[in-house]
Image: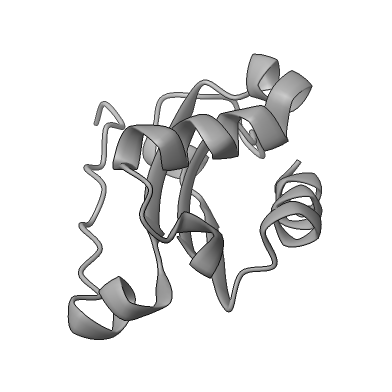
Amino acid sequence: METTIKNLLIDSLKPSILSITNESYMHNVPEDSESHFKIVIVSNNFKDQSNVKRHQHIYGVLDDIMKLIHALSIYAFDEDEYKENPIVLDSPNCVNN
């Protein structure tokens, strides 16, 4: 699934930076699950778009695959924003110990 997400985003948004992290291991899911992801994407296609529009664009690109994803954390920047402030928050570890 991670590879599919990557290919879809690259084809559609031509990002200069794309990081996809499978965070499923941090959640109470079966071993080798691919259901929780964090995406950091930098693309000038996001220039002058609100965060809501950026997220909608990504959801639209991922379309049917979104039915298989339980959680998606998105950090979408244009080139200038990322140069000024490339802060990405760590996700919480939700596994019950």
